[in-house]
Image (cartoon, rainbow, N blue to C red; front, top):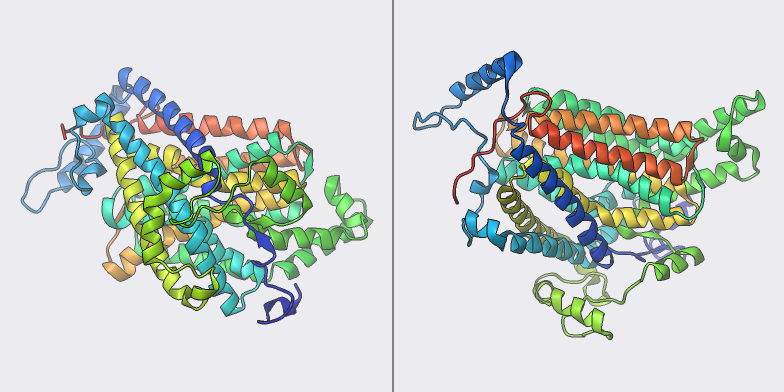
Length: 541
């Protein structure tokens, strides 16, 4: 990358000035509603079926051994007043303020208001991320003169994964439950399988992939997931385990910093092997073409900019954005837009817009440009507030519907927070840039695992309460993470067997894997295969 792009005042603008938000989070709101609510409905149907079939009741010798194991844990779980813990899993709903409705009233229809509240929080998070948080991060990156790779792997990754990160923080510090971890794991699976599947089916063309970007991100991500499995296997997180995850992400930043040099060595080896006839497929085409190396490096440098709906602006992008229905700005509470549908959206978002207008300076405007740190701080506060309300509504809805917290995180929250990246990846896949689409999905997962989990775990065990541990409530979570690892391996294997092509066949294959993952995760949580969890306590609240 030309160093001139990092000098302030140079006509060659920074990487962020070269990109445009053609599909931002709020503009994908209808997709979020459709996908997340559909997955929630399917999860509720399956959970209801398993509950009625009473698969959660263990039988046989192995079940007896498992129950004895749980009894030993319960004997050790004595509260401060010497009252023995209940023989069930305490729901996270008790960590939040009392609800306005009773459980019976929610079951009679009141739960729909909580689901609607969750969806509205998706929209509120979209507004704060689009209009305030991401612009503040862009200003910070420009002032620090960060390279594209480092900026994409740090601040811009945080902008893309802010909802998942704060859901995890709330799960660690407030609810002490698994909904945050479930959101991270579910979002990771959604990114790997659903996004690649959607891109393969709806790209409208066969997109060829290069080995380097897939190899780099998949290898580092696989190592991260393996470490996560090892750390949560004993159902507790020590301080040094959170620290290792954070240091792992520091290593990932270094890899991205020297990505071009490492890639040059990788491609040089391929070029050498090509002369001996050892390179096959589209990688042969890349090294034999005069500009193959430049094309691959250029695509790799761009891949970090598509997170959070940011894609490079070119003719094809404009066509795709128009095809998907690009919408006008709706960020002023005092300027209603034209058109009936836009007015409805503007009115629905008006409460959020008016609050943000008076509390968060918009550093994207020249008047407030120098207040970007205040924008960053205040937008972080509001993201935390909206995320708290989102997790609260999800927890109440899951309790009412009989869906465990971990499943609500893996399904509803994960889908709701990941749809924007899915649509952004689809846009670049339609332009033929498959490497960017795949790298975005895997690269954002690296941030979610190492920072989304490592940071709150590290803060809790090293700063807030030195020497403490973070408990993992669900024994089934480790199996879900193992399934996540298997999904990565099967996806990369499928790409290889498919000749490094992103097409309809590969898309159907990975979407099928996603359906299998959801089914197995739910069945594991309901003790179908073996006794994993105690049933959730069902108090009449």
